Amino acid sequence: MSKLSLDRILQSQGFGTRKYCRALIEDGDVSINGDIQDSYKTTVETDGLVLEVFGEEWKYRQHVYIALYKPANFECSRKPSHHPGVLTLLPEQFTWRDVQPVGRLDHDTTGMLLMSDDGPFIHAQSSPKRHIPKIYQASTHDPVTPELVDQLLSGVQLHDEPAPLAALSCVQRGDNLLEIVLEQGKYHQVKRMLAAAGNHCSALHRSAIGGLTLESLGLAEGEWCFLEQAQLDLLVP
Image (cartoon, rainbow, N blue to C red; front, top):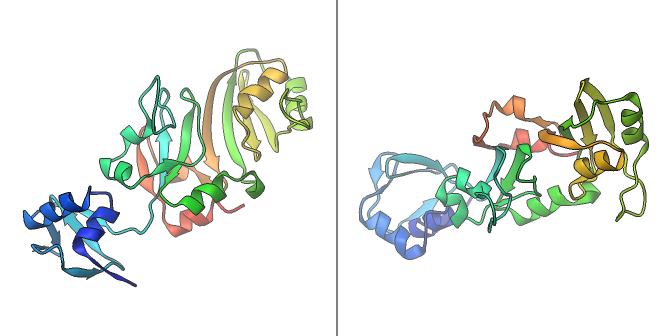
């Protein structure tokens, strides 16, 4: 448990600069349990705190952990170059909080993207040492063959990798559809593995990370949600 001044709390939650947060409070735009707060110097217990800013409830969170159903044509970059960035799909507060994507999905890839402002969490989830399985549905340009599945399971050689890379699992789900499970998280790995095996990835979707699935979160394309501890536990390999 800890107590912080109200302006520091608002700033930590991404509502803007300290000066702006003080102005919000002095203008009567912040309340707690229905009581308008008019002094930014007021110290408040952060544990279990729920603020109302402009009439909207915001639960205090030391760090935020977010799952986003990423649509196509969004870039996983804070400085996108050709398409909108994924941060535009989130409330502005998350930009102020320095929320960042955990790893990347290509601009044309859809599916689950984790985001957070917790540096150690981002590092741990991105580390290849964690061996966190990720499930992808890959549409292929050419029909799937048993030989293609065998190649992906036994391993294919990519030009910049010292050893062949193999899928943990590879199952044909349609004439031109594969479900592939990977744990390495290499750059453009699914697309490059399919190319190395003599096919081409025409569309890619990530449906799960670890034991956490998009289906269980009930998100539609472009929607996001906070992850609570029980869901974060599903990300542990």
